Length: 377
Image (cartoon, rainbow, N blue to C red; front, side):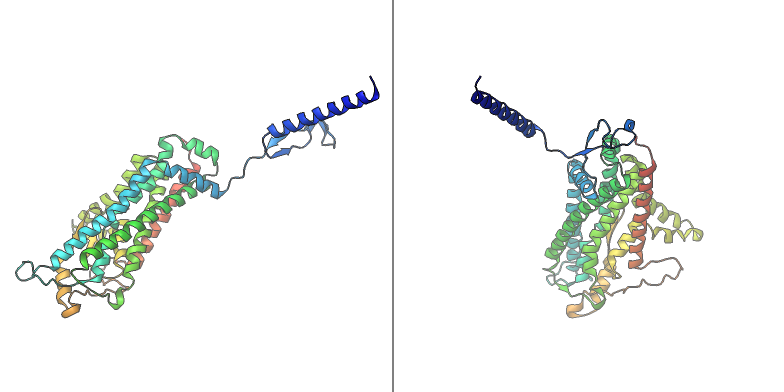
């Protein structure tokens, strides 16, 4: 073979080898690899025989945990059902309360017949009716928080969740933040719709402006109501982590919001020795939330899991306490509650807010400790 043929053959072989190497490089997935240290058998000397390549796993961050929990929450049908119920029940209850107020203010106090010139309604009644069903919706957002945790245990997905994120505190914090955000958005939308419904029903009757001590009522009714419902969702997460069972968590929530207030109220009527139980009942979440929503103003509207009422006598008294445009004004209670002659503990509206916050923090800490230390069932 001539020298030129040898050179052409060598160039062709080199080109084929280069093409094969490029093909293998293109087919190999782009991954990050770390080269391990030399084998233990070489004594740690440089140039030891054999090294192994390991894949560098992506770093676990709180943002990634949030994304995972948001994806899981939005994949559950129960999440959408509870959020929609919460967003629709608030305006429905507000419309019911506002319609009752408008109807009562159109009645003649002397004859009880409907008049063509209804008395104007105080604007504080409108804000009170807008947040009237917040105590009722505590059960809805609380169940949302309970099921956010217990669904993981009932469906046995808690094992894969903790395998992907073994940091249990981060896992529960991310789940709680996602649940709280969903509850807050749903509650805020529902309260804004409730405000619109109350305004549409009461504006034809006429409303007197807020008094000097009532300007905090709109913020407490809308923004405060959404925060209270969000706090109950976080409390539900704590109960879910404590019970790790949907039935147990929901029963604990019902007992805290409905059974315990009713039992304490009935027990306090048994005699003078049990009157102090009324102070305990005022520290339960249900009554504390109702007290916060008043913002220190006697709006004569109350709603709870066991009671929905409108104080007609207070409305008539407020309507007849002034003449003309101020006929429907109410007496502001201020930031401090009236003194109780019996000496029982009667928290102010901001003290009741601290009580709700304490319930939320204690329940969440206990639930987090149980999730962190207990075995996965």
